[in-house]
Length: 226
Image 1 (cartoon, rainbow, N blue to C red):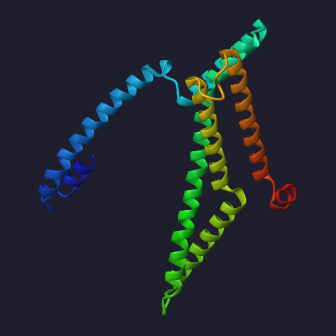
Image 2 (image 1 turned 120 degrees about the vertical axis):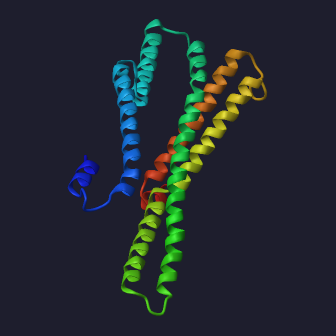
Image 3 (image 1 turned 180 degrees about the horizontal axis):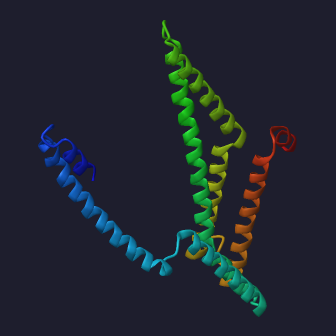
């Protein structure tokens, strides 16, 4: 409509032939793209009832696991079967630990990058003999970002959290692999090995929770507990 109005209003006044040679094919392409997207959107709406988001699928999985636990509790499942079910849940536990460790590692790397780049940028901007006014504001902004990043990194201990989570995941994986391969200390019968594996994994998880609690404490409390 814009092309039509412009052409009609400038008829015999301005030559828009060159503009129209580009604008008309572009308008046609946009119309075809709009039609294709409209068809796809209509199909998506028709299939919306059968589609579920990732969050909904995760929620359904959590509900199913809770129901499985309640059902197993009502049946009075023997200890050895509960231990076997506990062993089968270890892969998901490892995935959660490593995902959380990677999350903290990314945050730590981001803050460290800000500290390094901000420190170099602040030093470079401040070392100029005649610093323009806008560079002074850049220096102030970089200094503030460096200070905030250093403060968050020192207080929340992202690197330590990532390290402990990854260490716990590796230790649990080592125990699970030793159980599957039947190597020491899992050289007894399956029932005894299951009990030993459950004990070792729970010890590792308790140790990880203690480390997490220690990192969550303020500096004064953490120094007092060491």
